[in-house]
Amino acid sequence: MNNNKGQFYLFSKRRFLPFFITQFLGALNDNLFKNALMVIVVSTAVASSDNTTNFITNLAAGLFILPFFLFSTMAGRLADHFDKAYLIRRIKFAEIILMLLGCFSLWQANINLMLAILFLLGVQSAFFGPIKYAIIPQHVEDNELLAANAQVGMGTFVSILLGTLIGGWLVTGPQGPMQLGALIILVAIVGWLSSCQIPNAPPEKATTDHQVSFNQIRETVFNYRLAKQNKTVLYCIFSSSWFWLYGACFLTQVPNFSVAILGGDPKLISILLGSFIIGVAIGSLCCNWLSRGRVEPGLVPVGTLGLSLFAIDLFFSSTSYAAINTAGEIILPLEFITMASGLRVLIDLLFIGLFGGLFIVPIYAMIQRNTNGATRARVLSVNNIFNALFMVSGSLLGMLFLSQLGWSIPQFFLLLALLNLAFMGIIFYLEPVFMRGLKHWANLKQSENSHH
Image (cartoon, rainbow, N blue to C red):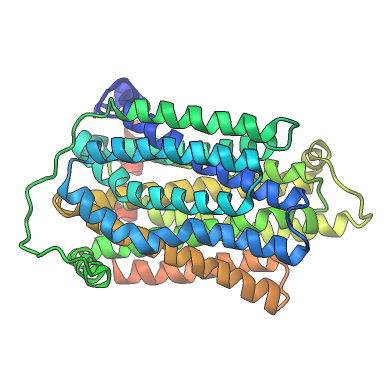
């Protein structure tokens, strides 16, 4: 891709724009419904006690992740054997039916039905996941791969932010549940219409005589062996899974961090979440600019260092903030932003997100570039299973240190920063392509600066 065409050149192309809209609206609907459910559980008398509220909240999170363990392998197999655009259209049509049921569950205020719908949305996401990243290399050129992933990454996190804010805000109004129900049905219909415009993406010629088995464990093991054939791909899968553990730990703790540690008004939760997610979106877009459209492994160590440095500073900034704010008064968002220590906390979260974007976009592009087209979706299904496994591990890590060992949330953030350096340091030692890439990228930047 000619870099003079600009960051958003692909949005003018039918081979990318309908797909981008489809995946953006799908992620938006997931988060609209999920966050509306959380708000209903927390803010109404549906739950009889705090313990019940905590149980339902954690159950909801688990029900959405569970399908990735159960169905990712099957999803990868289907995506490699059928036209990916055809499968997306069927998945998006199923979403319309799910959202009609979701609207009914909101109208009835039926928590059990909402949880069932959330599980089915997780199933839909599990089937869409391998297709989402496997179809991109079929529709874009090699020199457009990073830009496409950057924009998909940006779109995903913006949709998470919008879904979190709109879902939580809309459902609390007098006619909130019905208004939200109408919105999710509308979003599903528009998503299906946009999916109908995605160009065909037929399966690429098979390079293996593997006999498809209906034994999911055997299939998963086979897919893992496919991923292991390329060492770089395997370490990219571990790295992306670590990113989701790291990000999920921060996103999960931010609400309690905002209220319990920072003494903020509940509105501050949205400000801090927004700062983190906007950071990821900006970082995703910066990838293409920093690497001039090349798939650049060298950005991953840069992202790693930034993730840890700003998480370490978040420990110090939140500790110094707590020392200043000893009056115990509830801090409103505007007051928080005008405080130097509050603004520092906000900037830390923004930059943790930004370096997260620099970290994750090249990882996905490297997986796509280094996998065979005929098996790419199955390799990506392995990535989804590991992502889910690491995210569950992150929840357990939070429960261990915060609930059992009694650590504070800032201390937990500091631990994550140090674990990040340790985990990724091992990856960089085992797979030298990242540090070689960093050296190459630094030399290129030095060369460009000398020419200027």
